[in-house]
Amino acid sequence: MERRVVLRALMAAGGAATFAAASPKIAAPEAKADGQSRTGPLRVHIVMFDGVEEQDFIGPFEVFSLAAMLAERGVDLRYVTTGQPGTIRASYGTVVQVTEPWAPQNADVLVVPGGGYTHRDAPGVWAEINRGVLPEALAAAPRAGLMISSLCTGALLLGAAGLVNGRPCTTHHGALDTLKQQGGVLTEARVVDDGDLVTAGGITSGIDLALWLVRRELSAETATRVEAILEYEARGPIWTR
Image (cartoon, rainbow, N blue to C red; front, top):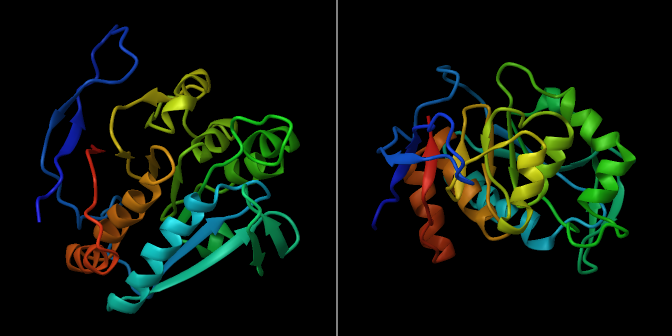
């Protein structure tokens, strides 16, 4: 299986390009961002809200669910919400029961999906930004040992929380200007790994985000086995420091 090229940023001082420049580099994918070895299952919380894009949360859920069965360490995977546990209605009408409350102190990885970017008056990321509860909760979440990740327009929720300011990041191509306005350093890659902040591009890139995190936090073997079961070869490039 052809391995993806992993990119390392070489920021061009004073450059006017939309994206940060980068040069190829092969990563050490099993190295932990904080240099620490961890025990117990990898605790992954996928953040849910009304208007969330179906593929944004289902793609990572599928990958981490398979990893939970394959990895020796295991995965404790949960849907969580900042509201009262109950049902949420996704972008195309799918109803999902979310039983777990917001508890980032009990997570190793937060996954923040997007949805609803093109409809400011409908449920989705704009409604969550305007309401303010989720961005405020995200702003208070960072701590040692917690990785916060996003895919698609979920990055704008991180931006509203002040978490992308001055950080390499990406989002759906249609929302790049908004992410830049929020202070993000736009980086041309499918997944941008800046240690405790990992962002991915639009919609289907959530599969690649989750596969990268499985590779990074569990093992390359587990990620490869998940790819084989899904009959999906992870796409790149991946940017990492």
